[in-house]
Length: 310
Figure 1 (cartoon, rainbow, N blue to C red):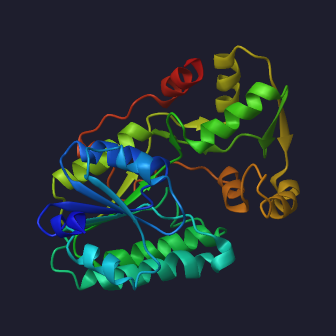
Figure 2 (figure 1 turned 120 degrees about the vertical axis):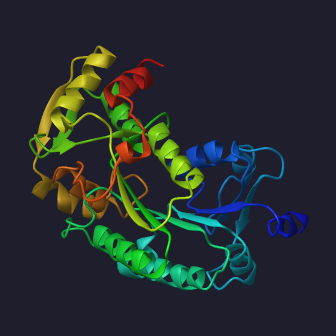
C-alpha cells in the first residue's frame, strides 16, 4: 500500500510486457535514472527477479485482472510515461485483432483521459506497415495508427530483430547449431535482415524519455549490418568453428508443419515467426532512426561472436 501511495508523488514509468527480454533490459537501464517502475502483468512472472533489477522498492510488479482493474487505472492516471512492449498474445484468447488491437484501443482510451501522461511509447517492428500477409503485423499497425491519432506525445519504436545475451532468436539458433550437423534454412536463405543489439534499443528508449520527446514520432531501430540469413548462419558456423550443412527448406512446405507444431509446447517457432523469412526485414526510412538520437549502433556480427565465445 505504501508503494502505491508513493507512486502519486514520484516520477513513474509503467511498462507493459516488462518481464520479457526487452523489458528487463529497459528496466535495468531506466532504474539507474531514478524512476519508479511499475510492471503490470496477467500471466505469472518471477516477481523477485524483476524487483532485483532496481533498488529496494523501486520496481513494482503487480497482477491485474483486466484494464478495468481500479488499481491499474489509478496507476495509469498517475504515471507520466507508459511503455507498451506487449505485442505477443495468447491466440487461444482470441484473434490478434482482438488481443492486440482490442487491448491497445482500450488502453489508449484510458490514457487519453489522463492529465499526467507525458509520453506514450509503443513497441512495434520493422515493416509492420507493409506486411499484409501477417495478421499479427496488421493488428500492430492498426494499433500504431490508433496511438498516433489518440495520444499527443506518442512515439512508435520499430526495432529489427533484437539480439543480445539471452534473446530467443540467437538462443534457439545456437541450440540447433551445437547439436545438429544439418541446419534447416527456411527458403533459399537470400532474405536479408538488419539485427540490432539490445543495448542500443534500451539506450534509444532512455534517450527518448530523457529528452522528453514531443509530438508524434516513428523510430526505426536497426544495426549497421544488412545480412542474408544464409550468410549469418555461415558466420555462426565459423564462430563456433564447426562444419555445418545448411539445408534449404521451402517455406510452403514448413507452413502446414508449423501450423500443427505451434499447438504444442515443443514448436521451434510460430507461423508468424516463419513469415519473417519470406521478406527482407530492414530499415524502410519511414521517419526517424538511431541517427536522430545521436546513437551509433554497435556491430551486431561482433556482438554475435562475443555471445558465442562467452
